[in-house]
Image: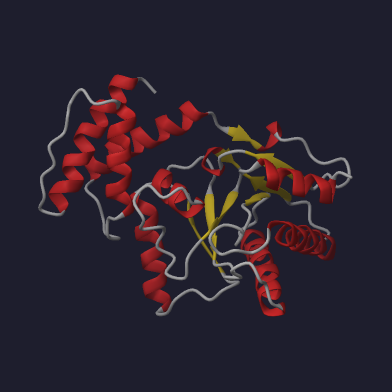
Length: 263
């Protein structure tokens, strides 16, 4: 995306976000676009779930889609199936650039995204680049449900500005480094619920993040083993041809998945 156009859009979006809150912010029109985007991101991360004006959405959608395209979109065909199990793939990269039928978001129990400005968790990234429409869609689902999302369940929303078609939101167990038998069962249920939700929609591909291994503290190797075993068992039981991508961001997680599936 051309830097000047990015700055131009951000110089419209930031004042609009401030005006919603009855506040003003002095902006440097010559500031680097990355600096302006950090301000924009902080504002949308802390924006309540509510509709936005059509003009705002047009600016936002152009910005986000342009930035995602600039990062480079990865398609399922770009990711090599594993020789040991061709139904599975391992891909290290930014899940917000992955063009599959559905990506999985490691959500919190409110299902409203991460509210910490600029936080580098997957929940924050997905909500930021999907756009403000995603928090509103999640809020509507939660209002219909009337209670917080249980651990191990899954909800599906459109992906809005992301290259995937859908986002499947699941709340993983909070293990804090010491998973119990209940935590293990709940983590397995996350994978099952996401697969069931994708299957119910007739989807042909899904990409899982490393559920619960971030701030929720599930040990990475054990979480990966549960993920692989649960997914393979689900595919076997249904004779399913669904393509499953294990999306990792860290080299350590990639090495763990490859040790489980490629050796």
